[in-house]
Image: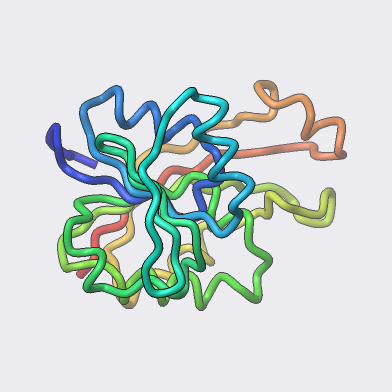
Length: 186
């Protein structure tokens, strides 16, 4: 994403992802949003982190050094709370959603971000008839359709990942591709 140390990355629907710690190790500040109080509490407990907690406008905030987790509804976030976001990392949000939820998710992301803000989006592609999600297949045509009005969309890498993920072969997949996009808010 081209972020400098100290800049803040936003991780939507973060759960208790270890990616949050990886960004911290790289010198970035991190804000995640997660609706599950269980996942947020588990993240801090499993990683032996102590957070200061407070509530505001129906959201619970957990802060620990350069990490801030917001426990609440992604769709309740507003752009005025996102002005310190320098980049977004979406590794598991879009592909966790069934098709009928993706348009609103992408539209809301466009409303949250300032022009020039990059998103690193990791998607997967497979024959959806071979396996029901989640994770769901989100093919490049759909990514373009979801984001092209508000973002410049560029594929930066594609690789076959089925051999690295035998659990998906066991679920019936004959092929699995990971596609990484760089989106820039227009």
